[in-house]
Length: 184
Image 1: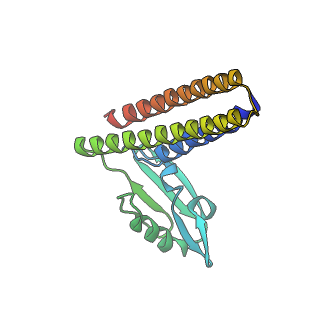
Image 2: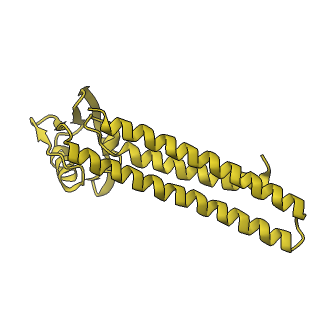
Image 3: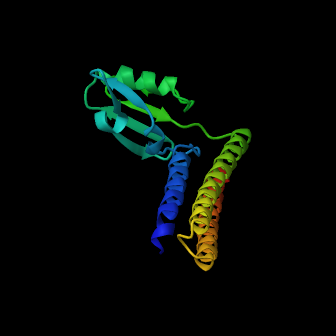
C-alpha cells in the first residue's frame, strides 16, 4: 500500500475497532464481562478497572460473578455498578458480587438495534470524513505540483476502495450484532 494511503487506512481501521469496542459493551441478554470494561472504582484514591481489583467470571449464561481481592471493595464495586447505565442490580454475599441479566424484552431489543444502527452510521460518517480529508490532502498536493494529475486520480480511487472496504466491514459488524440482539 502506498505510504500516502496507509495513514488514512490506519485511521479508518481505528474507527472500526472503536465501533467493535462500543458494541462489546452493549448487553444482549447474556453475561459478557466486557460490559464492565468502562466502569471504574476508587482504589486508594486512584481510579481502577474492575479487572485490576477483582476476578471476573461467567459461571452461567446470564450471570457475571465478581470476586474482589479485598472484601472492602465490594461496596465500591456495587456503587459503580448501580451508578452506571447498565441497568443491573448487584447482589452480594459478603465475599462476591453476582450480576444477573434479565431476559431482554422485545421492546428493549428493538431499542438496542436502533442504538446499534446509530453507532454504525456514526462510524460510517467518520470513515467518510477520513476519506474526505485524504482527498483534500491529495488535491492540495496536486495543485502544488507535488504529485501528478494521474497520481492524484489513482490515489483518489485507492482511497475510495479502502473506504468501501471499511464501510462493508462496518455493515457486517452491525448485522452480526443485530442478529445477536434479536436472537431469543
